[in-house]
Image (spheres, helix red, strand yellow):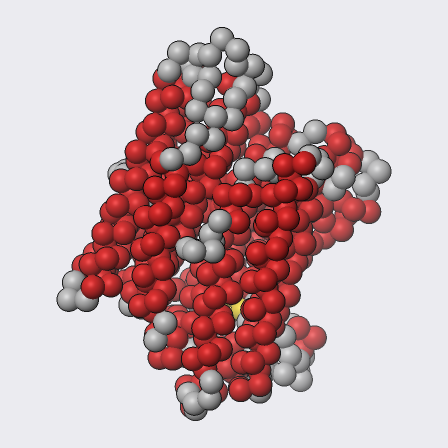
Amino acid sequence: MLPGDTALLTWLTVVPILAPLTGSALAVTLRGRPTWQAPIALAALTVATLAAAALYVVVALEGPQVMAAGNWLPPFGIVVVLDTLGALFVLATCVVGLVGLAYARHDIDGEGTRYGFYAFYCLLIAGVCGTFSTGDIFNLYVWFEVFLVSSFGLMVLGGERIQIDGAVKYGVLNLIATTIFLIAVGALYGVTGTLNMADIRTVIADDPGGPLATIGALFVMAFAMKAAAFPLHFWLPASYHTPKVVVSALFAGLLTKVGIYSLMRVMVMLFGAEGVLFAPLVGWIGVATAILGGLAALAQTNLRRMAAFLVVSGIGVMLIGVGLGTEAGLAGAIVYAVHSILAMTGLFLAVGAAERLGGAATLSGGGLYARHAIVAALFLVFAFAAAGLPPFSGFWPKLMLVEAALSQAGSAAGVAGAVGVILSGFLTTMATGKAWALVFLRPRDAEARAVPEAPAGRTALVLLGALVIALGLVPRAVIEPARAGAADLLDPSAYVTRVLEVP
């Protein structure tokens, strides 16, 4: 047991989880007061964001932060661990969650509020933050379940036929992936005798024998399905266009990144040299996902389906970085993940604004540039960022990934990775350029139904647009911690020591 009281600073590690969990519980308890729901969620996510920002600074200055639940020392108890990678993703999650609330104020009506939108919303943020924070692989599965339950609730909110159809496709594939994940966790526990990630790393490093290749294949399959990688990507575009716009945006920004994060954490940090064996496979899957996602986006006429396929293409880009298996490749994937959390959330919100203002969900209507220049300009910002054009946030991670891939130019996987990143950017530029020309520049369809622009929605778009531009102009703010996170994944000695030697 851990002697003495838990230090006050250590409690900071769980605040980004506890604050939205508390907000969710309060929203359910006070469900009879609809006007209180949004303020409760806003207060909870504000506290979570401030705590995440403070925690990010603490981790940068002092290294990984660990909290042992119930004072049970690891590896016997459950630990919450925040290293550079986890702290960066938790901060991005809280920021996007907070900004999304601004848009939700005009996207969610009274009925959605009464049926628990804000409770599910807070629970989703808590689940994602828990995933990025846990130091126990079984609790990684538990947090997956938390955000899956809340995402089901958000997806079917409204009860329309198309939402139920999308939720079924979303649910079936994710439940299959979760089941495979749980089987892999059980098999790993049978081989190592522990669930603590730091302890698993130690056991595998000391004795890399056993059926680790089979277990690793199960993890790769589960996380690739979660991330919507080819050829199991079809559930994402079939479901992300069905719920409320703010829900689609939150899903696009956060949920697929959980699969990428878990793949890096488990296959690179825990499995080490054994996990590197899967790197070429992951890289080739990434190339196929990046290119086919871009081609599919180019073929779409529905705005949100187009944006959903761009999410798929971005997943491929990150998988290319993971598949390179080098510090440079992992750093590029991490920077791209942070960029994608912000840019894809913003792109979906901009698409939602275009649908609302133009009265159409397809590449029709037109004339929005003349009537809503701010929304048109922000759509272009997110589109350029997604394509990887300077000076926006997507340029730097794609440059990093191309450089990392070309450094392995002697291998076919390295050349293919560079081609995949560049070609996905080209296809994204074409797809979003076509959408911008038809939706914003083309003369307005006389039958299109327009509604007034909502200041709250515009505020959310402006905030995300400013962050995308800021990261493009000051990329070191993300590149340096991403490099530190990649180095920690490849050499987790500091992580292992900090967890297993909790004072």
